[in-house]
Amino acid sequence: MVEKNREKIIEILEKAFDENKPLQVQLDKQIFTYYSRFSSDSNLLEDIQEEKHLLIAPLDPPIGNIKIITCYKVNLKIFTDSYLIESPVYFLSRPDIRVLQLSFPKELILGKQQRDAVRIDIAPEWGLIVKIIRPSGLSFLGQPVDLSIGGLSFFSLGAIPAIADKSRVKIIIQWPNKKKVARVEAIIIKHQTKDGNAHFRSRFLFESYKDVRDVEEITTALQRLHIKKRELLFGRLA
Image 1 (cartoon, rainbow, N blue to C red):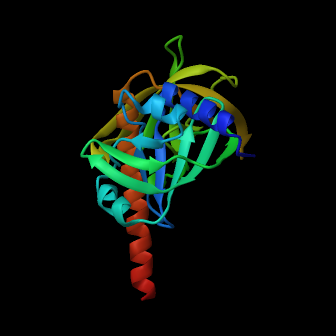
Image 2: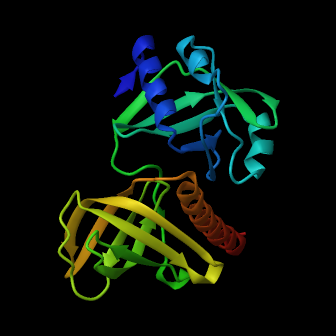
């Protein structure tokens, strides 16, 4: 659904700002994506209400802060509890080191929210493992399938656990090879059996900015692995 009503656009952006969810940023038609958040500038909410511009924090990984200055178009993906929002905008300026200024969107593309952001496939040989802990304290291990800043898909290892959709769990993502760990609360949004294995999709329920950063670090590192794989492939084809 494409939303062009100005009042509705302001309302949706106000909600996204209040929820302080991560933003996914794509520059022009580049494959690689970056992550950011709305700026903490105290005037940003008023700027949104007056349809002036959007202010976001610097991009992660930092190389995006150099590339955005010369790009033509910026595509934002904004995540709320209700929608996955795509917003084509333009880079305007960088008032200072703490903020990037983007044009106010003329329209929002609204999709149903299930999982925040693009899912990144996880190869088993990369050595990531997950531990899922029920509120009762019972836990089991899982093999991650894909990850995004908003959620995780995984297969259970061993006996199939009895977890219904909408169950709340704690997920620990461990990547020993990279010495990275993320611990985050989550809700199971879909559970099904594939080839005799229990397959789960979860959506993260972040309780702190640290939790967001830990997941972002793993997500970004996975993206870099995919980029390296593409570079190797292009090298062989050259």
